[in-house]
Image (cartoon, rainbow, N blue to C red; front, side, top):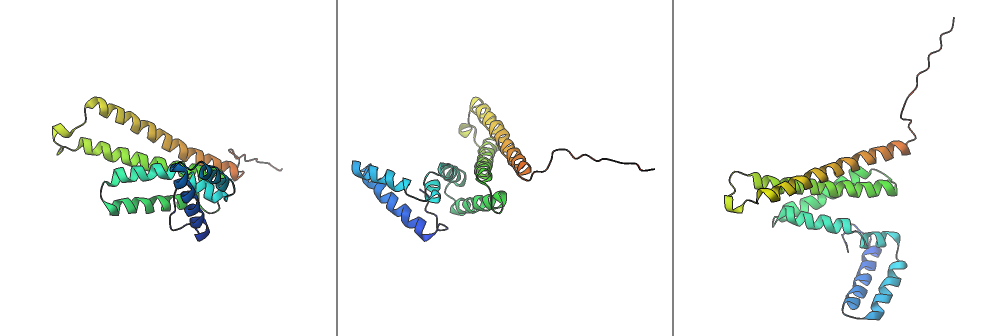
Length: 180
């Protein structure tokens, strides 16, 4: 569960309560599992959304892969994703815009990570024994292409959603009336 410091105190406290119940349930306490389920049903939508936010979990895995042991890169990527979320979603985003924003941010990170991993393989200074086989690189290239297409499709979909929400017609008609 994400208990980032930007969460309100009440939300952080709820996460602690849920984590305690989850720890007891994982230790074999069947009653704790029932209480956890009930507590989640009684939680605010924000708490449930953050507890179920597997997109951010996946992002943290990718960030640790991309950053390696460089804590500056790791923390900078976390901040960068937060900045991107705010910029892409804009003020007062709709639930659909929030979903698309999260998808865009996740795919951006995946595109960048795959590009980085591939560029390492193409580095002329990499000893031959550390290079991945060409068959593996072909798979990575396909993943890159697929992720890039999905990323661009998510961007396009967000633009389409915003256009539809603004009630702007696709075509503009100009009518000319000649008066004599």
